[in-house]
Length: 472
Image 1 (spheres, one colour):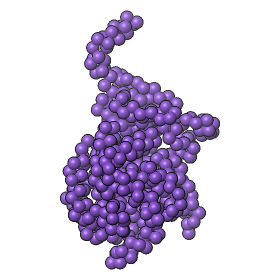
Image 2 (tube, one colour):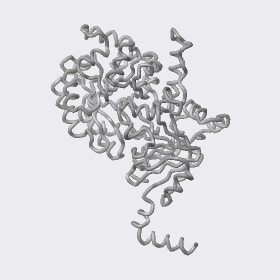
Image 3 (cartoon, rainbow, N blue to C red):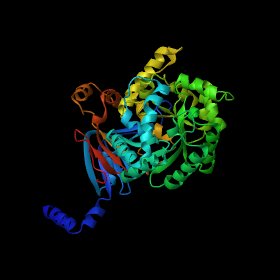
Image 4 (cartoon, rainbow, N blue to C red):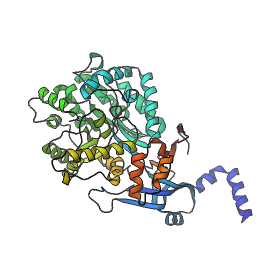
């Protein structure tokens, strides 16, 4: 047997192509978790294997998932990577984030409209310089990977070059990014405004350049109703008609002052969402950030048009915007994904965003007229919102968000003992649900040990953070 092993090693050294073909798939072994349904509607929403294997093919797609002995007996000629004691799960999906606001995260003391004027607009002015935009895009994408986020729906700025810079950087990492140029032709500084005609032309050129190129997807991106004239919203609707598989990404009912302002600007509308509906912006692949102050008829409209909402609890708490009614969204059948909303949000970490989501739902229960009918946010629902739920909100559940066979193998390796406190606390966590809740409450980027995109490792923790784009 020893002679056979020596001969095999010598053959592999002499003919590396043979060795490579011998292990066309890689089996990642550890505790494996992924969701198959919404915990709010299913009694069996997830698959969990204490000793499991995620099998990834050479094409970067999922070949199999299941108990380790079963998968390894079925697929014997594979390279095994041992992550015993760690949790392997699909990468997190950020349903709403602003990459230009990376450098202004944690800015003090304003609510939404004043915050935009004081911090956001001056910061975004700098993205007219593509070199500058690329420098921020690198930091942004590195932060996503370091926090275990493998897909994001992203705001650029009004400058087309800001979107080019982001997509170019994402392409070098093979990261799935959905992004768009902001459309904004009023109620902002003159140096950040475009026009209905230029926003249409610039957006169309970006769609033709980037949409479905590699893993890039485009989102038509009016900032929010107050910064677009009816003429510009008409052009946004025109783009969606001409390119029916692109996304629409904007803000909705985040702040009470904003809601009142929209009614002043669009007096003919019956409400905030009705403004977007009138211009044909509500449809499948339309994602509305926040939705904190939605009425019942607006929830019903979102469900009818198959539009989705990005739940951004960290930002909603930080800016004092309000508390999203997740339970009502569930009741109406509205797809919801979790969003960090950096830089209104104060962390790139999906774990910390889940932590804040739990608190926001607890507060909503406290201030509800029917607190006895309000349910806490379970750990299962929180992780669902950051994985398969977000994938469904983005109409990408056929590609990402779970370990379904044929899905793109974007996944992360979480260390439930990443800190002394986590290790100590995990001793009393009996079930997987308990462990997940502890991890979301006490965990952060330090718990993300490795991040993979299409089966390629792009991040490994080194204490200070380490990136190895292009390596296995």
